[in-house]
Length: 253
Ligand code: SAH
Image 1 (cartoon, protein in one colour):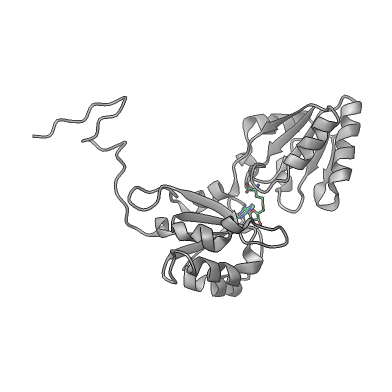
Image 2 (cartoon, rainbow, N blue to C red):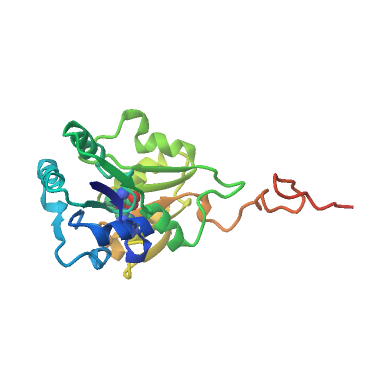
């Protein structure tokens, strides 16, 4: 059996219980060595064979899977964060379907969740923003025209930008063509949940100089939006004057 497993954002104890069990049972592990914390692998069997996908092509990954399947072995394909975001899993799954090899998919905690924890805040604040845009700057991977950063920035909601540290000056230019201003709060979260995690609060206008001054070039998220400010409205859900499915509003005289 092939198991796609989300390793979580970095801290080895932020993998799911199911993912951790599958690692303990695996005969073969293919992991994204460039981003997955190797400590996540520490409970593997002694005889478990480990491959680093950073050095492999899709064809090589599939060949290791095909062989493991033929030998009736348990294989874990470990992706960073949650594999449904920038994980390149579809192309692997489609090859497995073509080869008639069964797989399952165990989600992980994405780094954008790790970043919120590092920032000790919430992306969806009443009266501020009720949406989060997860996106990236166009790099070698093209981004559809209607999803260009400047288009996404028109919403002015909470935004998390992946894979874009190397293009941070362009990111700022794009953001400023949308609803954000130089003063809109922003932050760079480096290696969220890793021991070396760092959070730099700044504004859209100072994102590029912050990244340069702190020497942050990769493994970081750019987060932008008014959710980083102090003010917001209280939630209705926990408001004493609000009736929910489970609780009657307190009577007010
Ligand atoms: N599937 C992953 C994202 C893979 S793309 C997830 O769900 O998190 C790789 C990009 O994710 C990196 O360039 C960086 O922008 C971001 N990233 C991954 N781990 C991170 C972490 N611990 N802290 C900050 N950013 C991270």
